[in-house]
Length: 138
Image (cartoon, rainbow, N blue to C red; front, side, top):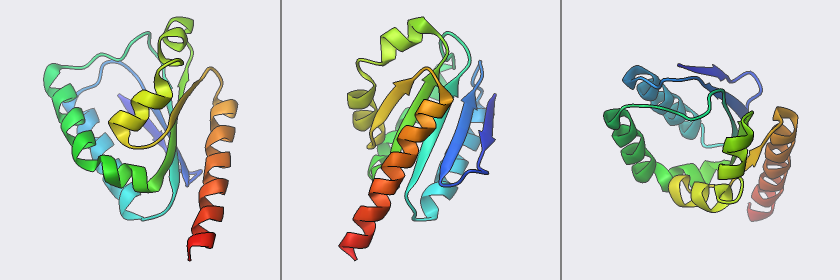
């Protein structure tokens, strides 16, 4: 199950809870479609509750296909994805590769944090930089 908090737009929060169902993935994609359709800079704070995300092969296939097809759109509007993990094992695994892997997979920067406040501060800084750059481009 995924839980969403869009009350802090342009920072949206997603809490991933195991296991991921096809319905969860369809809702996740629908929300991303709505966020991207706004055409505004935004950031995602993704929190992982378990040791490792588990989903069926079909769910992973749908997610990978959508991400591949929408990578450019995501990169155009999403200033970053801040991943908050409570597990030291996941932190050790993801932190060294997060930025490069997220850019390759989703088209936007990514970082791993152990604390939500730190993650949100990183996103807000990136949004501030994006807003300044947007004003200069106009």
